[in-house]
Amino acid sequence: DARYLLDDAHTTVFSSPFPQHRTIRVWLKRDSGQYWPSIYHTMSSPCSAMAYHHDSRRIFVGQDNGAIMEFHISEDFNKMNFVKTYPAHQNRVSAITFCLTSEWVISTGHDKCISWMCTRSGSMLGRHYFTSWASCLQYDYETRYAFVGDYSGQITLLKLEQNTCSIITTLKGHEGSITSLWWDPVQRLLFSGASDHSIIMWDIGGRKGRTLLLQGHHDKVQAICYIQLTRQLVSCSADGGIAVWNMDISREEAPQWLESDSCQKCEQPFFWNIKQMWDTKTLGLRQHHCRKCGQAVCGKCSTKRSSYPIMGFEFQVRVCDSCFESIKDEDRTSLATFHEGKHNISHMSMDISRGLMVTCGSDRIVKIWDMTPVVGCSLATGFSSR
Image (cartoon, rainbow, N blue to C red):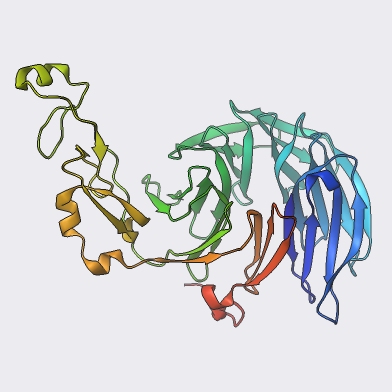
């Protein structure tokens, strides 16, 4: 299911409600302040993904049967006309994006593929298969780069051509399936959220392999949105948590975990180091890792816990005793704000220009949020990009 805020004089919620309902609804805000469905359209198969193009008022709806249906919305948002059906996938459609300049509709699905089709002719232009379900998609319109996240936790960067594609690189860093992606074409940053409760920022434009880890959610990250003007990242998780991350600071990369056969602090052997255990007549210890320095340590040398927001750790995590002593009180100051959505969020969309956010949850409730108190009122007053 998906929800979208339309850029209209009246706040409009564009809704493909819960799968068992098989309906598309357009909600208009009346003079009374209440929302009423001006369009209620029933589909032949449950809706699973949606893309809306504001300027042309074209909507593309992906379904569980693998088809994508295109509609055109009238200027008053009271009528929706069917345009055509695209046989894009053999299984549930997971994500859709539409490129007006090339007239392509690009989609991913649970048939483990990305497809791109021509909206003029309705014909299939190309298709590429992955080893796992493709779960989310972002597309760079200028370069024709597609970012595809899958259920194995991998992100694949593809260059799409008219009838073919080439793999540029693959990004590996999550320990769970990729649940959301966001591409910022200005700073050339890719953000990914996953079922491992974490977010990773990939500095694609820097070309140095720089990544930043953000850990502040207690459940899988369902949606993310980067606000380039204020350098803030908004993320929502399945347990209803809403986080606003300050990305306008110089954050530190989390270190790679080092491997060792013995504790890198006290040199006691780990339990698989049979030779040293025999030589020293000691029992092997369990291996842990300090989140700040990345060293392999035993439990006795890592008894302390601390948050370290500059490295993305908003929760208390394991650190070695020496790193704990080096962390000052001001280093523990949070670099994100956390809010309660009060429903299990399954999808989120933002109208950045007005500072509005819409969330939908598994409780079948759609909520509209005024985010200007937490993302800055400058959004609505013409904040200029730096």
